[in-house]
Picture 1 (tube, rainbow, N blue to C red):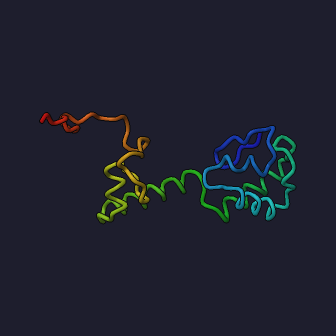
Picture 2 (cartoon, one colour):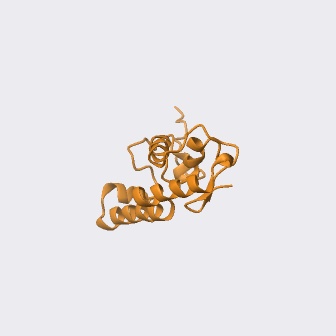
Picture 3 (cartoon, one colour):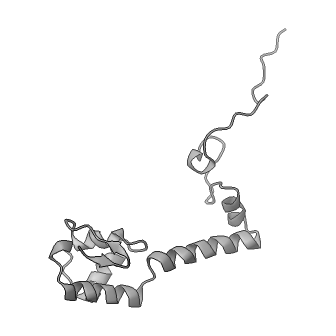
Length: 127
């Protein structure tokens, strides 16, 4: 089992898809990493030699920001938006969608479980 950037890559997957288990590595960056490391993307993770794993690790550390460093950078960016009082920061602070989605009917994932509000519905009027 190959361990790169603190992540155990799945043995039975191809290297191209196994690298995507690392936070910050997608399909395009995975293919470019393998190209720079001169590793066949059709190889399985279990078939990688120690030299190939070391080469992939070297390319990753030199050219990419992944895992912990990337997570902390994203958190710092969100904190900066909150501190300066930007609209996106306010949305993050209130746990609401920050990219323009509607909140009247949807966004239950961000808002959490429904809270009923008393007196919301109008009672039917009698004539």
